[in-house]
Image (cartoon, rainbow, N blue to C red):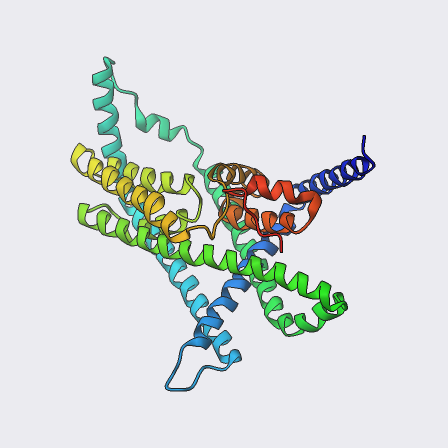
Length: 351
């Protein structure tokens, strides 16, 4: 055995140990880490939007950085307020439409029972009466309170990140006094920024297009709450694969209970499915090109892994987090094989 073999084995064992400790920390600390991760994403988007506003020429004059950041905060706050109003308005409309949906659902169950040869259809009303509504309401209220509380914590983190970001440069220089080492870390962070920014920009554009086309389809067919479902499809499109499937399935199920006829349901299913397929499998990969050098199999695995670790938040962040892991692994010799396995074509940038 060569002299370098024990060194390589030791380095690999150290990398495996670090990975195991990191995964344990991510699982056990998810209640703390998820709000921080979401806050960092929002903070990053605010700064990206501020840079975009700063670059807009206004007759030879540009917005100063502080004003551009203020404008970005106002835009995001208005967007959140509009989304909250959209959801609250549609909840009231859904409550009003529930009796009609229940009647259509009972009609469909009766038809299916006759086709299956049952003498009498199951009593849907009796099944509904057996449901403990008080428990469901308490559970929903607890979940909503938890989400609201987490969002409040996220906002606090974002505010402090915005306050602290003016000191980041001096802290960065103090952390890495060696200029060569500091430049290496800058290059690493720059690669992360460029790749994540490219992914988020293209994914957002494709999500807007997908949600917009889906909204038009649902509006033409006459599906209730078309605007709300267009927004939900826009959000779901950020989740790889599963989000697209849910973006087809959920509006189709609504069409089933709303119309109780085949024509509108097939229209929503076929048109929505074609939209998701064309954009997700033809347009988006062409725009991404080689900028997202991650294996499709790795994307699915990362979706499952991050979803099991961080739930829904992990599903939304699965691709950016995997990109960060791949870039960091490519910078160190012991972990470079991991980056190669995560990549789409085996070609990784080491520096």
